[in-house]
Each structure stands twice: as C-alpha cells, then as structure tokens.
Amino acid sequence: MKKIKVLFILLLSAQFFVSGCMLNKIPPPYNQQQQEVSKETVKEIESKVSNIAAKISLDFKHLKGYYLRNSIRLTRDINFFVIDSQKKFDEYLGKSSIHVNFSREIDFKKSLVAAIVIKPSLKLHEIDVSAAYSIGSDIYLDYEITQTGDSEVGYFVPAIRIIEVARPQAVTNVAFVNEERKITVIPYGNRNMFSPSNMDDLKKNYTGIYKGTFPAADGPGITVNLNLMPDNTFILRQTYADQSGRTFESSGNWAPTEDLSSFVLNHDKDINEQMRFYFVDKNTIEKLDNYGERIKSEFYRLRK
Figure (cartoon, rainbow, N blue to C red):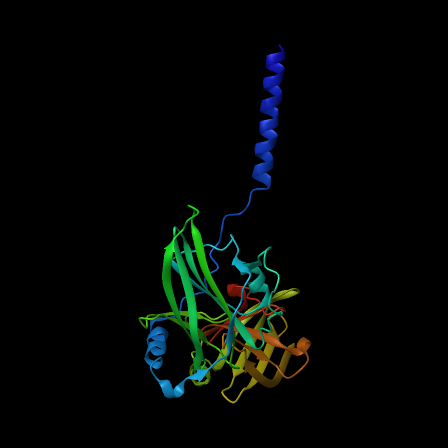
C-alpha cells in the first residue's frame, strides 16, 4: 500500500513538473539577421570598392567584454550583424560578468555597431577588422579571419569581433570585405531590398501621388491622397468615406530617415503633427505607428 502511495505521489509530482516546464519553457533561438539586399545593390557596392579616390576613412574601435546572446541563431559559418539602436544592441549583446572596463554608452546618432561572429567549433579563430571607410552612403569594413589552433578544453568555442564605427549622416548598407575581396552586404536600419538606394533614386522613383483607404474608428474608412513631391514638399488630403464633406487638407515639408527606408511628413514641426511612412517598394508606402514601427498591414498601405 505504501509503495502504491509513493508511486502516486511521484507520478503527481512529475505531472506538475512537466506542466511547469510547458508553461515556462524557454523560447527557441531566433534569427536576428537583417534582411538581404538585391543582387543589383551587391554588384553596385562591389564595383565601388576599388575606387580609392572616393573612400573616406571612418573612426572605429573594438568593443570588448560583450558576447552574443544565446537567443540569436547563427545561420551561417560566418555571420554578420549591424546594430543601429540601443534596443537592438541589448537584444543582440550581453555584458560579460568578468569584464569590468566597458566602453561608454554608444550614441547611435553618431555611430553604429557591427559584429562578425563565427559559429562555435573546435577550431580557434581570430577576427581582425583593419579598416572602416565610406563610399557614398555605404560603409565598408575590411576584415581578416585567421585560424590560431584547436580548442584545448574540448568544447565548441565561438569567435566574435564587435566594433563601433563613426557613421556619416546617411547610411544605406554596410559591406564586410574579407582579404580575398569577397563582400557580404547587410542593409542598415530598417531597409529592405526595395528601399531607395540613394537620394537621387528616392526623388526620381519613389515620389508621386499615393492613394488608399485607412481604417477609421467611427466609420468605414478614410480616403487618403498623398502627393509626395521631389522638392521635399507634400500635399495630404484625407476624406471620411461616409462624410464626403468632411475633408482635411494639409501641406508642408517631408524628409527621409537616415537609412532612407522611410520618410516623415512635417519633420520640422512638433511630433504630434508628424506622420511617418515606410517604403515597401517603389509604388507602395505603409503608415508607421506613433513609435516609428511598422504596422505591417495591408489596411495602412497607399499605392501609386
């Protein structure tokens, strides 16, 4: 009888333990790798790398005492990351408990952080970044990887190099260039492969008249007509679908964000008067929320 009672208690404890694990299970690692760029962009960046006259050297320094968080999945043997905000920095990197002399807090209005990470292996590697420079709105980082031996402790060892780079006012991509001149391109900020490549491209191909209907809390919707002009001015007309006489028209100046992924209406006015849009492609824009984050909904898109 005692044996049955003990067995019952053990089974009950195991059930609670398993249930607790199910309720509090740790989420699997996720891939924080930035979006890919188009093949045309890669070719353009590769063609510029040998233009010595156009290179502008950038200050950079190595950041020590940080590690890549376990939640970040390494999808390739050599992985590249570009970090453009403190929020992303905290998501990607943690502080080592044995390191005491950390660098000052990074001003992401003036700098960006780039990381090169080699998948854990029994081989030991050293990663060195020898130069940072810009050509136009693209940043180039020259790096070299050398194998220094095998792990003596018998477990897989990762290799990581993190650097802070002073950046120009506009940045579109970061190109990692190895000693064989092979280039890996990572888009900066919130860019995608359809984002404007530069200001001339933006004004030529992304301006125009965008139309659509946004949801409305007190009606069937708001018809929106936005004329985005190359001279950095705009005219915005909003009409409530069930009240044709209720139309609001405004005009002003617009400006692109630093990574050219989006733009801000009334950038020179109070934040409450501003409206932000994301370039989905050359013919589509998407309204951003009050924090500048993507809503990712067809209901908030305007098209030419």
